[in-house]
Amino acid sequence: MPGILRIAYKLLVNDRAKFTALLVGITFAVFLMVAMTSLFAGVLNRASATVINIGARIWVMDPAVQTVANTIPLPNYVLDEVRSIPGVKYAVPLYSGGALLKLRDGFYQAANIVGIDDTSLFGRPRLVEGNIQDIFAENAFIAIDDSEFSKLENPTIGTTFELNDHRGVIVGIAKVASSGLFGVPTLYTTYDRALQYIPNTRFTISYLLVEPKSKADVPVIERQVRAAGYLALTRQEFIDKITKFYMYQTGIGVNLLIMTVTSFIIGLSISGQTFYTFVIENLEKFGALKAIGAKGRELVLMILFQASLVALTGYGAGVGLCSLVLWATRLYLPDYAAIITFANLVLAFGMVVIIAAVSSYFGVRRVLKIEPFDIFRG
Amino acid sequence: MAQTAIEAIGLNKWFGEGEARTHAVKDVKFEACFGEIVYVVGPSGSGKTTMLSMISGILRPDSGTVKIEGTDIWSLKDDAIAEFRLHKIGFVFQDYHLFPRLTTEENVAIPMILQSRNWDDAIQAADQNLDVVGLKGRAKLPPVKLSGGEQQRVAIARAMVSRPDILIFDEPTASLDGDTGRLIISFVREHILSDKRCIVIVTHDSRIFEFADRILKMEDGRVMGAMKGNFHEE
Image (cartoon, rainbow over all chains, first blue to last red):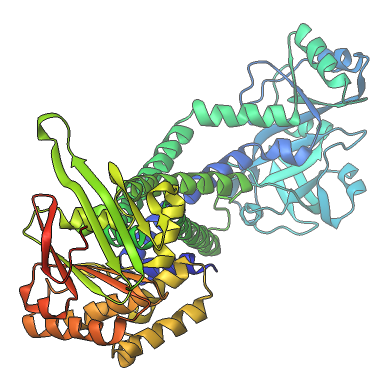
């Protein structure tokens, strides 16, 4: 490390009270920012769980659909209409709806039932136990081993339950990429069985899952579906739509945004004020360094180094603390919906960079303004 | 005759604007040679600190030239002047201006560190200079653990660590009691001054006048004459 940065380092860390205050301020701010945004990311991820888990490239739905859980059934002829679009390789129906299960011990448990196309089994989950062919067996269901699995009393293959007076049998245990948002377990079955077991409205298709022939066909399919009065979205577009709904049409996004901004302001206030005081207390010494022969850019480098050091250390400590808290929380609440994503980390890092930049800006201004002559004049 | 270290001619400095404009230094001529200690004395507001700042490359004069070892320092660019100060001039400030969060040896090493010298070499040189000023055992202590006289000696060690040709002292005894002040300046006279070094001291402490080779008196922004030694005025 160049000597001048070593001096800057020692000036900073040897002032333990201020260094601690700076670290605590930034760590606390980063912790709050990451915690809030990871909670939001977790909610959004789970809100889009079905879209992520099914994995279709294009989803066709009623234009009024806002989230994947809020299905508006499509008439059967839409399936034929979509299949007739030139760029469509194949299109299959998907059922997604809620049901009340009666478990072995007599308790009732709400569950999400996903009915996948009988012919292709498109969107089937990854089985960890059982054989996918068994889904065609009588009363067959596949239980998803996610964070809500235990609510089904940890079923095994052969476990039975009742669904609207129909007998259901678990024929497989599967894993999916994301658990659902609403705290209910998920069962997969065939589309036809789902319709058979669950009372339905006149129209029954929740979504049409479409595979385009090529990427270039996607806009054509979207346009033609729109012309038919429905909405076709790519997987990412659907996730974005769900995200926008939770962000702008529920209080979740705004509240988390307020908390994130508040934590940013708290971090900025504590760190900015402390760092500025630190620079001011050393201002005469910086002036003396200038008189001795230090150049302005060297002093700026010292301050930027100090601000960056505090920011990065606080950032690491904040992210570490948040990870630790999430890990500890999951020990007691396995379905705690928070995930630290790369975007969360980048956002928090960006905010920390702003905190460091603003904190050092005022210090740098003062240091550049101090004249060595002022040191002589006292 | 000894070689000229500092030569300033026609130095003028104004401060302020409009009616508040004051002529702080008026057509000052100043010369100091290697191997001598020159005092600049005078009442507060006489312009001695302003003159000292101009001859040491800290404050740009409004007119006049300052030559240090033949180099017209104010013809240099700002960075070059800073570099010149760093290598040629050592400063001892009135309030020492030591960093309380660094050890004594780290404080002393600062000029060498600013010269981008290796850290260990700088610390080693600092320890040697602390030895010279009689503070070898205090190297690892922070300056706040030292007495005023010791802090002044640390400041002297810092000023001379990079072996500058010129040392500038600003009111070096102002914060010290009489005995300590005399002790410090006599130490400077005996151990710091050499044939290859010139020392300029701004002071109004008459108790240390005996250690000067020449004493120049300033009043109202002008060098009025020499109280001791030669004024060097043709």
